[in-house]
Image (cartoon, rainbow, N blue to C red):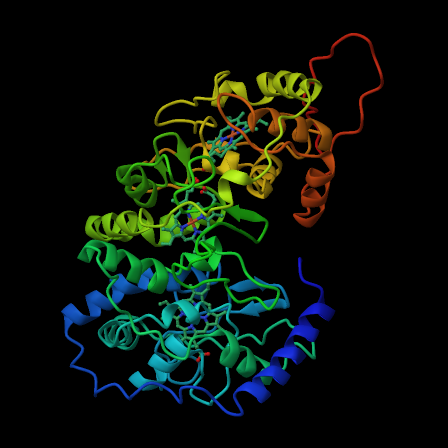
Length: 454
Ligand code: HEC
Ligand code: HEC
Ligand code: HEC
């Protein structure tokens, strides 16, 4: 995707060299052993089940159509496909033979019982925040609350030399915290501390919402002076917007209730969850208690807008582009999102004052327009509402014009898009080709959607 293999290899070699110089040996040496686990009471198992939802373990560790937690789900990484392992308590193919300390070491440090390091596709740098009590509850659940499934792990689809695991150890020494025990946030309420624990730790929100360096580590794992934490990042063809206090492109104008509703039901005020976030809502945040959702909202509130957020250049697109975009918007989008961009309450999302629409990075917008989307079904909102894909009915230029218009109408303010940006994401997503250009004609045509798609 974004990273050249050569760049990554160079980074790997540089890391290795640097690590050897700096450290000369493994850091931290592991955390102290956990006490023999308390008896796996039903209450402890239930607590572990809840934590597994918060950590969204199932969405990565379950392949389509396969038993939950039995692994085999392909996870795209910049170096190739990694297949998640079986984490059911099967003794041979799963983690049935794990001790509680083996489990703690994988979760918090990314080290397997055989001493090998794992890929950070497993968000162990975030999970390093986990308390002993939570690790024990998760262990009780995965040993006693989950049915064992015999299913061999699939080897990763990563080519040599990146498939060698020893560089991962250097990566881990350099970039993953050896231990990051949770400390309550200074001068803040217990709710803010709880929220920080969930967001920085088990919820691993930064895995998608914090940008990564060339060497793939998140630029910050917790609030930092440079305000890079949760400031927005591109991920698998989506853009996960800033969760900080920016007014235009962040959560600055959202109320706490907006944040809670969004995480609970996938919608709030005018917006709806889509893409990767739809999965996060339906598999994880939807099941969180109201108290935990409120805690997350109150923690996110403490993150100010990054200082550069207001200074991003936001020149208005030329009027020709806006006019073309507006016309194509009326034809293709206004039926659902309304001519005034306000959407339909409890129906179609509003595009006015929408952080995704105003995000500097338009990846999510282009992705949605090309491939469409569906509002995740949750118990709170049972109606599945669909946005159709436009890849085969809009040209690159038309899609770019519409989005440039949407990003500058109704109080929105974000840079215009080029046809080239649509073209390259179309290729990256393997979305259908645009319609052939219409023969030049002087009469305005009603751009009839072709019934036969390629
Ligand atoms: C974003 C995806 C993702 C999430 C979320 C995730 N994992 Fe993983 N996990 C992985 C991947 C990928 C690997 C394999 C990495 C490798 O082989 O290098 C892995 C490896 C593991 C292993 C090592 C298994 C073995 O013996 O090979 C355990 C145990 C584990 N995960 C438990 C969990 C638990 C418990 C949770 C939830 C609290 C969780 N994972 C959440 C992706 C994920
Ligand atoms: C697997 C990647 C991923 C993870 C993990 C993730 N998000 Fe997201 N998130 C996204 C993407 C992509 C979007 C943009 C799509 C959308 O708005 O639904 C998004 C959007 C959001 C939005 C709406 C922002 C807006 O402007 O519309 C909120 C709020 C949010 N995420 C909160 C969280 C929180 C809190 C967590 C951790 C508990 C989290 N996310 C974890 C990918 C992720
Ligand atoms: C048939 C109704 C329909 C049409 C037509 C439609 N959309 Fe949508 N749109 C939706 C639905 C439903 C969602 C929510 C999708 C989801 O959550 O996955 C959505 C979501 C969006 C979002 C994300 C908003 C958010 O934060 O949730 C944008 C941006 C968007 N549409 C733009 C457009 C544009 C541009 C067009 C025209 C090219 C268009 N839509 C046409 C129904 C529609």
